[in-house]
Amino acid sequence: MHTFIWEEGTGDRGADNIITCVHMWLVAKGIVPANAEELATWDKPKLKHLVIGADNCTGQNKNKAMIKFCMWLHESGYIDKVTLLFLIKGHTKNDCDRKFNELKMKQNKKNIWDAASLDAALSEINGDGILLKRVEEEDTWKAWGDSLGDAYRDPESGTITCNHIFEFGMDEDKCVVTRRKFCDAESNSYCMRVSSKATSRACACMNPQQRAEHIKNIPLNLNVIPQPGLSAVKANEMENKIMPLVPNQFKYYYKRMDAKKKAEMEETKKAKNDKRKKKNNAKKAAKAAQKQKKQRKGSNKENDSSAANQDVSTRHDASPVLV
Image 1 (cartoon, rainbow, N blue to C red):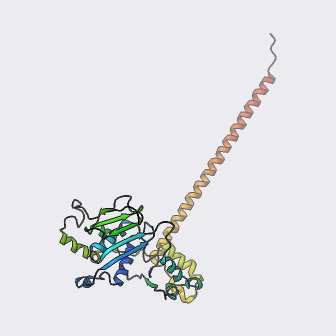
Image 2: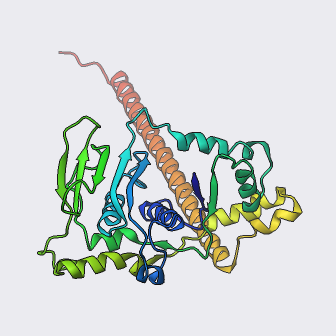
């Protein structure tokens, strides 16, 4: 199992991040070329069949970007057939889950203070083929979803979440995906090639030869997704709340506050204080209004009572009238 790990500030956990990791694994395995030099001299045989098993998380795995990536793997000529398999709800435990548990066996028995200690603990038991790759700052996330969107249409609405099996390479047309809900269910096909009428997309007006070259070069022209960085709130927690409890030799790892983050924290604190003051003032105003209302109500009752007493005394003091 090839495991990728990264910090919160290094990257998000979206579809582009997952696809980038899958592509890095394919490069490491020699299934696809790593750069332009390898692409120019690429003569390795095609992989016959690649099966990608995943859970049903729509933000990471079960989405149009991943489906388009699998289509690219087939159309680019690196893999004859690609199967994207999503396990059925309630039956999603697999070999990866078992190996993840093995991966964390040493982690649960040690005090871990920094990334290097975590990597060492996770790598201590790797006899079962568990390889750990930490995504560092020098590694780059690629915007696969945007570039693949120029070459492929989106799947039909409502056809992603309801299906569990997507197969690429089952039709003579390289841009056709075959979908099924279950293994023995009836399949249906959909051509994902971008329409020639979609003139805003790069591949719309290309002939087959131009399209083939464009598809091959997609990895070389991907935009880089900037790393998000650790938020000022998290950096402040690490440096000012957690670092005092950490052994001295590991304190370097928790010093995350710079001038920019300090300024952001000051703005955040000011905004929180202003919000708190506004809320307290609103409460005070509400209490004052309620108090005035009660006072007015009490005053009205006293006025009504005095008027009633005056009316009674007037009736008692009146002289009797004889008819």
